Image (cartoon, rainbow, N blue to C red):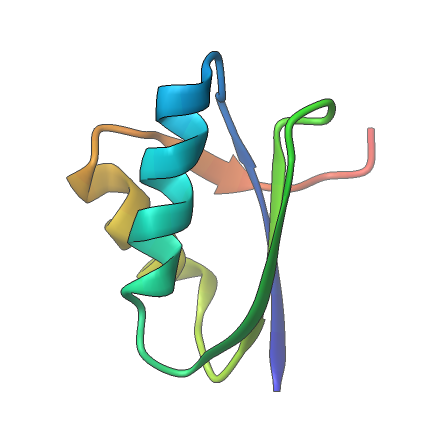
Length: 69
């Protein structure tokens, strides 16, 4: 099982709803967590960061890999 952590801009409730909807559509996602304070999305399952980033790009969201700095 993979752990994907991404940084994504989330400015309003509509953005958050769209992001959750896009992630739910990805096959083989086990769990996901959206942290609006950190603008961080954590996804687990049989998925790659590229798959999640592509799903978010389709709704107009640019995601980057999460770094601890």
